[in-house]
Image (cartoon, rainbow, N blue to C red; front, top):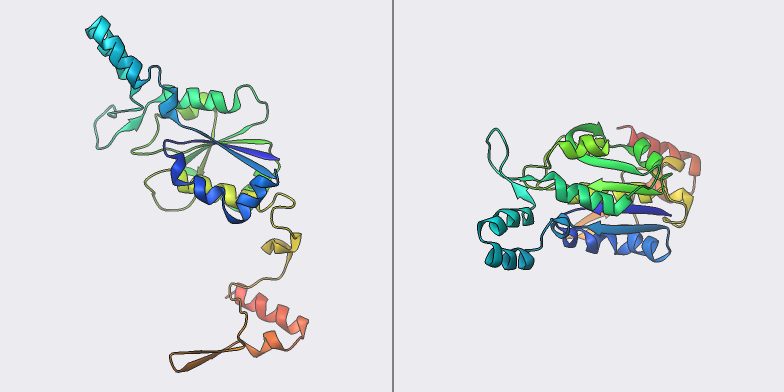
Length: 234
């Protein structure tokens, strides 16, 4: 079983996806496990305690209460806020502790491009730590301290690392035996096409008729595979 550990400020944004459909069944079948670690819960002080401390200790308590925040303005200026390293590091430590062989992934635009080969390699791991940034990102020292692998999900920028984390889990889980039900469901193990069809054979929509390609109805598997291969290489 692979245990995915996600450090994120917003677990509720992706938890429904990871507990539904194929992934949800994989969790119930104990093929994979997903745990969330919110950095807000790993600040030095919790808000209520901080307010009580301020009341008793004045300015000293006020200074300490700043540890409640998970973000701060970036050094060197610039828009937005940066996630502080301490809460993220504490969350990561809680997630994997001293587990050996855990893969630690930091989503970053300057990381290695995620692909099927990496997904398959990760499927052999027991523990995978996924650090999902937000706002302007996470203090770079987190990546250095944890010795993470930087990964990019594509040539674009998102508002946070939650969607990349969910995407990576989905792609990796497909390689875990039993998650898809049949090994043949993996594209790499069969001849597949980006075009698929089902019933009805002839679809009539708003006065127009759309037919299934005749080769798919022929029963000639050699010709069908040739058609699918051609579609893949277009």
